[in-house]
Length: 447
Image (cartoon, rainbow, N blue to C red):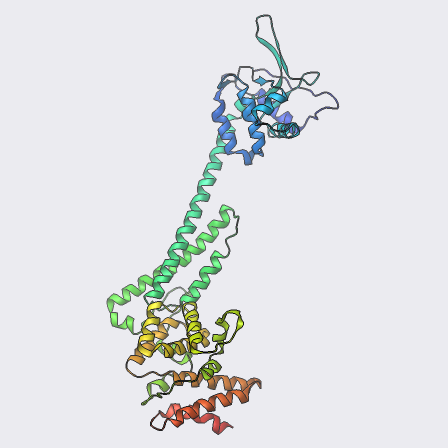
């Protein structure tokens, strides 16, 4: 098809390099080229962002294509349509004239159509004696034929990108779902690992997901999540293998050794956690006759002030019911499973179990696995070798030592510790261990 580069009258529409490029492309259309105009239009719609076209511009292009009577467009045929603005507005769903002109310019700039202006700027066709069109002025849609292969390639690239974006979002969704389920299973089954830290690592990763993100951003986050998924999976599988070898050892606190140095899991030894919750557990094991009198709530709160952080609105804890409610909040935040909590309540009693949770919560930064440690204390409680008294006394002792070092609150801490000691001593029937007696006597000797 032979076309001429149209000139524009001075003072009307300026000629741009983009328009010239489109006209040059149109001149290179092979004469034997044939395309289905609506198939090409679909490719253009798919690739509209890459082409820089707007939705309204495509609505106008749709209308322009409808003015050409043939569905198949040939490289050697006349491909100019000359609808008036009124006709275009009707087929473009009542678009305002100013909007029509603006988006026609977009189609020209994108190289989707070419203006063929008449000397007076009107659009019309001049016919010969036989009724055939000799010259038409309007919009040349020959770029639809000339760039059909380009539009197809762009469309395929866009579809491939959309598919890749959809797949990475599916990876994220599946990975997030699996990690949450595995963490819940690990806590519920008492798998010894620092589940609180795993949950924090998970939240840190998913917190990076922006509201609108590129595929490359999501792929990087998905890789991080899959790394965490692998660690959690390996921890659970390792625990299952260990339990198959010796179920009793896994029950008594045998812990998973993870070979990755930067793992979110930590290997744990029984002796490490025994000293972390508030003193040497030998004090507990050596108690030959445990106090039957309950610890006062005030002393427990003095020993475990971090429990006050869990009260909504910053209020205090006024009774044991509110203290038990705070323990229910502390338990999941430390990664203690519902089954471990229920077992502790059965073995120790609800109030004693809550005090134990409070003591662990007070020193949670020094304990690798709060759930594993609670199960260990529960096992001791079942055979009468555990009391919350030494834990609270040790926390009060630590508070007193800290107060002396800082010079703040030392007197109050000493009074708390002495008060607790008097409660124990007034139980004349008790025979306590030397270790616990030394803990009680320390404030008096140091005063």
